[in-house]
Length: 441
Image (cartoon, rainbow, N blue to C red):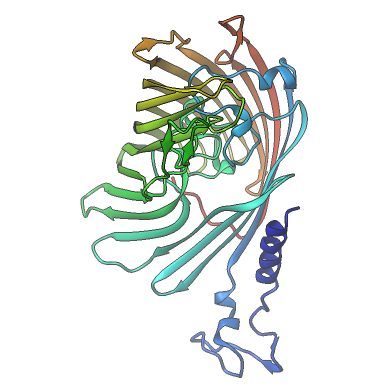
């Protein structure tokens, strides 16, 4: 484990050993009266109401895949990513899970009211090889007119699924279009957010975010210079990514309707080897726009049983410059354009307190890529079909069996894209302990 990871772990251990209220503190016994005030010596921050809610979530899987690990690494959804899988951004799972047993992640969360004006939340992620902060942000509590501010590192509220943590998903894996545009970790950035709930007879929220723009799937902020010096792209004038969205919800009898529209606009600076001597590499510098629309229809039969239909459509346009150098390290420039889109639709049923099932359809639809005004003729309309059955003995444990038929992966062989059909069976175990806040609808 890296030295930085050891420091993080030490901080967490220190926080988890904060003395509970009513115990000995610096030689004085601290007690609380009916009004929550200290009645004896000691720091007011030793009160139990200042000890944060702490939880641990563990996720492990057993995976069977018809494509072997080494072959799977060499397949992809053509042209949907700007970087290869081995440069995958930090997320809950590896860029490709291994056949057999997988330790996906452990998530440690802290949440608490700071004072009458602020809440504080942090989520730490532990994998086999890494330890880091997934989210760490403050949010306001008492601003007027339905306004709320958030600042720190957080999952963007773009779309329906992005701000949900992995353990809240209805399926083990993220939809293909989210993976293609944002990566398995989603759009997770450092920045600030402002939301306004408009005072209407139904829920209507407007939000905007200003973010650094480091997401390596669609944006990126890396500076680079080609070996021959002809290409010299500076780092971004941070922040470089702007997100806006509207979300609305209303009821029609027992049917709840939730709908939204989102947009993300930012700079794109991604380098793949153009600065390396003796390597055939490429780089992209341009502007990216991603638009999305989502809808969720949830019919509640009673307080437990429901049927939910959820779907999202995303479109991405990238315009800019494409730089390429050969092994002689002479760089060239071409116009670059990507127009891509995709969607997912899922139907999930909660049959009783313990059992649920669902099906999902993924599609990477439009896939038009032009370099130097020449169409690259990459495959489009790439589908994946999924089905899952889950058993929840309690609200703290989940066992899920999922099947994927993935027709979205190709391998480049002798200059041609060859489809590699992949069948997957995933058995997932997800367990949680501690105090964990309720999820949003």
